[in-house]
Each structure stands twice: as structure tokens, then as C-alpha cells.
Length: 140
Image (tube, helix red, strand yellow):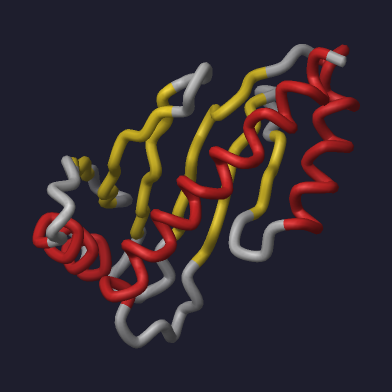
């Protein structure tokens, strides 16, 4: 496991809240992830991903929402509004028409593990607030 994800795993595992923290790794990356749910919505994974021993960890939620080509333009407008509203995450639609939520730690972050819980909790809060807006945009 790469250094930053190992530090994040150790930190989140020790947190007093009893998070269920999981890991995955292969030759190219290591991941630490936690599963969350949305009221009246899907479960999703917040993933901390490292591809080397630097501190530039990617934080991702993949496939929060999947849309059709016809719904894409509505979702793009909602993503633009949310990207203006929220400072710590970016809402992105990929080529598979999945809506992903993204954040990247700066390369020179001194202590990624001390920031991990705060970033995770910001993701949870922002996704909880944004999900109804995304659904309204898709289905209106």
C-alpha cells in the first residue's frame, strides 16, 4: 500500500466514530474506501486513491448518478451550479454518463491523514445536500 493511503487508513481506523474502512490495492494504485448512503438514494463509496508515495491523493465518488444522453444537458447545468456553490468538491460527468464527485489533495500536503476525515465528512455533507438538486435537474 502506498504511503498516503496507509496513513489515511490508519487514521480513519483509529477514529472514535467506528468507521468501517476498507482497502484495495493493485500494481498501480492503493485505495482506502468507506461506504455511505443517501436518504431515498443510493449507497456510494468515498475512495482515497494513491498511485505513488507522494501526498497527492485523489478522493473520488464514482457513479453517484448515471444518466442517459437525453438527460445529460440537464445534469450539466446542475453540475455547473453545484461547482459554483461548493468549494471542496467538483461534480463531473464522465464519458460513461456517470456523475462523479472529485477532490485532489495538493502534492505538498504535509499531513494527508489529518485532513482525510474532514474531507470525507465534507463529501458526505455536500452529497447529502446536492443529491436532491441533481434529482430535480434530471427529472424536471
